[in-house]
Length: 87
Ligand code: SF4
Image (cartoon, rainbow, N blue to C red; front, side, top):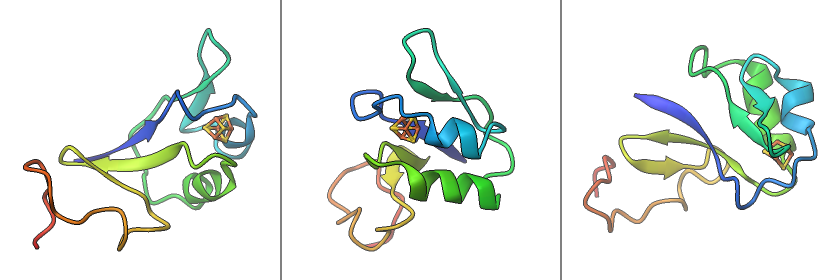
């Protein structure tokens, strides 16, 4: 099952994702973005928010591996045991 991941170490709290896609993102108590819904992951707003993030903090995670939508081909070399991608 796919889900949204926000890397809090990378998030700078700019608010772009929250402004673009309030269905999926909100600020936490630390002023950083966190995902609030794992539904409708094909939405245009979600993909716009991912594209708009200045630090690349947002990714879609599936089966324990991170899958950056923009760099899907480069994001995984199949080296980890949790990888669901066929080598
Ligand atoms: S767009 Fe990126 S850096 Fe800005 S609040 Fe969202 S996750 Fe954080």
